[in-house]
Image (cartoon, rainbow, N blue to C red; front, top):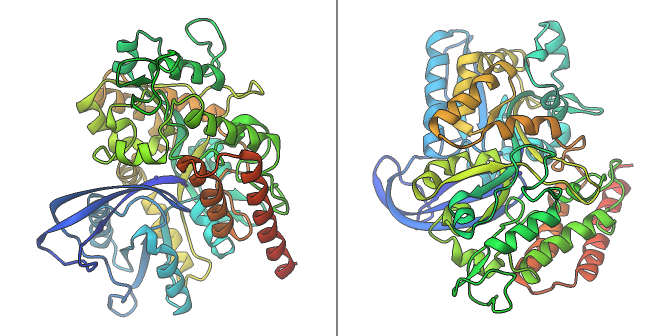
Length: 501
């Protein structure tokens, strides 16, 4: 939704391109699954809904002496009508119990976040808090956030309440602590139990580091082997059969990482950073073996092994489902916990469960993680009041409300202890402990979404020139693809450092 993270948001696009307020209308609901840097997939369906009008930037007058704290929502999840309703409840609760400070949530569509936020900065009307926002969103305005360290130290704020790994994610070298840990979205292997049972194939292991049922190591090579057994053509042949028809596949064994993001998940194949550039942000890594292996695995899963839908198949295959697993025609999918929004729909259609992430070729198990937080813009006119509001939002009751609103694991250790039991009660038979165990295997810094020079431009290059062309099949020459993309990324890095010595 992968801080995107990739993250899920729902944007309502009215046919007239203008939002009408407070009356039912026929719209095209576009379920948009996004990372904080790009839109990956959209699925449209026409229906009648009550349209919620976007909040305008125009400030609301308050009595003299009362400080208004504006909370900007749009860098990730939190923008659907249902999520806005929760924010409104929190806003009303705070405003009814405080007199010197009032809060207002300002919600903008994800696609407009950069324009809206930049406009507010240019008009000298910055918001006071951005929530929720992940590593990618922070990267888009990397040097524009307030270091919270002085506030944490002055209040002796208890950072030990959070899982240590989640604190590290939001501690940036040279920038300080930019946010308090809120949401954690580790990845795992979701799988369709019904598909496995019908094929007579053993499930993925539930514990990290455990072998597969046949005693062989649970690796990505083993995952591909298993995926072939549960991939079926229209005649019921699996991908191992000589009679298998790759032009007429009705069920895929694997849908890759997230929404077609082998760049971000490349760290499964090596020890280099997963964002495509070196730790010092001066060199493109796209020609390193780690990236070659990750891109080749992705390409082969589509065009050689046929265990994963290509771009055309995927677009048509999931039109009415909203996500790959939701189609009921995918055996396994490695994706983050922010898919929680889809769990009720999955449960109605099929039995599903969660397995451990496999080991990479280097034998290491690594979990790619998205993480949401709340940050304070460095240009806020009300830093002290913003900190007070942030502390209130992170008190237990409000914290739980936000966690539930964003479908994520809580970074707070105490609240996390009840998370598994609550989810298990809601979804009996699903092993949610896998996500808790995943916190011991999180990718080390830098996070795959961490800032890099020319952040958006470089991410666009990697999406459009690598991932999109392979998914479409317009170019599957991996060495040539990576060479061209590497040259472009290196050029963007060099341009940035030439202008910012």
